[in-house]
Length: 572
Image (cartoon, rainbow, N blue to C red):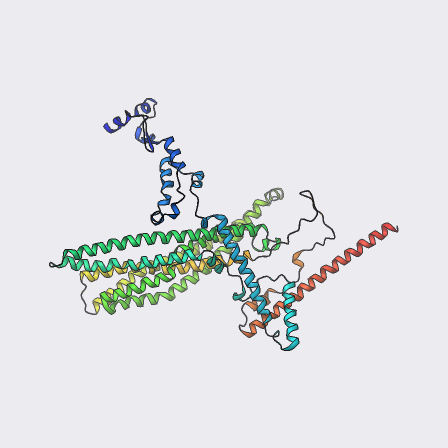
């Protein structure tokens, strides 16, 4: 209480970034308890302006120490400490690195995506030319190649699902070329971290022996302490920069995907818009699939460093408990097929869940968009029952997904315990006695082994889930776009001039049956598969020419009707 009265005598004086408030004036104002309602230290307006005016150093990204310790973000944290809460304008005072700016991120992605589409189209063109039936010798062979090239040039060939994966644009390849460099550098940092991860258990064994020995030299203990300290510092720096690069890479991927989906939705044809579930699926692509891609980047390196950590842990365990560690290896091998089964089960349930969610969101958006018609026609109960039925179906799928996830997490969490029990049981049953140093070192190694054993099945599940999201986004980005109309000779905005226009429903266009497409998907590979692919391309070309013929016939009939109407006007 004496300290509070002492501070109250210095009212109105500014000390750095805080200003002391007069406690006596607060009590006179009738505010009440000083410690609960009004803080003793309030921000000083002058200090806020001073902090915000110098919140970012332009050379911060060039300073090695600033980059190493993340000191470049300290001014922003200081500003938040002064103001109490940051807002959007404060974030603008600290510009992003150039490779993290939204425009730069999308430009890089868009450039590689266009190159990938061009490469895939050229690959498919070469494939159709080299297909059996086109490789005949002499002039006839050259004519066939020219004929095939002309057909492919005249057609707007889409990359349908029946195409071989080698000739389809790969979204994963585009993302790797766009943002893969930083992600690979993060892997080097993770390798350094994991190499230092086993310094602790080894030094622990030496420290226990040092404490036991009465004749041990003090310098040995100091050396071991320095080794542990340095390894922990290196591990901390590498791990923080590893996660920073992984999170940044994931954020870039999500930014590029969201912008690409938004731009594609602006030019999507009406047929494809309905085929992809309308605004409901587009919202899921942006909100769920893009987020799942971002989350995958955080622990994707676990695909290799899990095996690296497990191998080193087993190697050092062999040095501690001998062949008894093979019992833990056997437990791991037995759990691998179980992990694969659970991952496939989760992927199947997750795919069904996404389909149910798309149907529910699509119907919900349709109801909201047509609310006036529904109210006028008194269809509330019909649409309500239909929506609740879809919602119940989605909840059933969601419950199965959570149940499967809970089972997998329980199984994965028990894996390290089973490995440790199997190893120690084999060690004691073989007639050995557990020493304190051996037991503690083994437990430390098992503790290191816990994370990769838990993370490896998890990352497999995430890869399976993200694979579905990658495929959904890829199909959406390759969807058909509407044909853009040129500006023409119109002078004022809003003018529309149609001359000799022919309008027809796109659904009337003849297409191959879906059964034929499924046969191509699951059909033979190799030479027969190439022949079936080439045959399908030729069939599509014939259907397109038939469609063009029907359009020309319809235009001809319109022209004849127009001629007859003009003749009647001229010669009534």
